[in-house]
Length: 82
Image 1: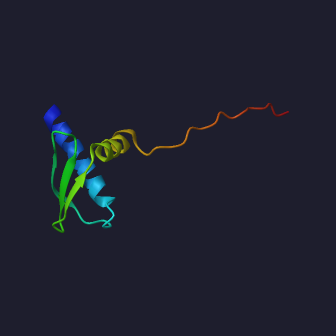
Image 2: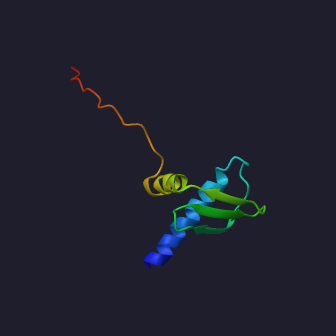
Image 3: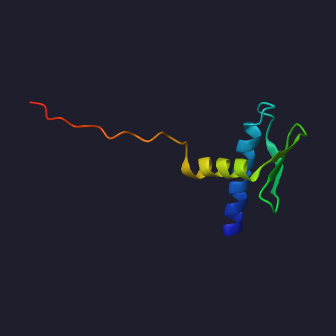
């Protein structure tokens, strides 16, 4: 089960990385793998081979797991209204 979850997460990371690539929405990630050094290689539907650093892959995984990053909310001061 853990291997299937890891593969699903890697697929989501590959899709997100391919969609955000400078070539501009190059297409769907058809093949993907994580190299031993942490880099992620994605082959898209256009035939482009894209190699992403471990940092880029970790950032994409964090966005998937944690949702979009939001700035911290300042604590509101409450006043009594009469």
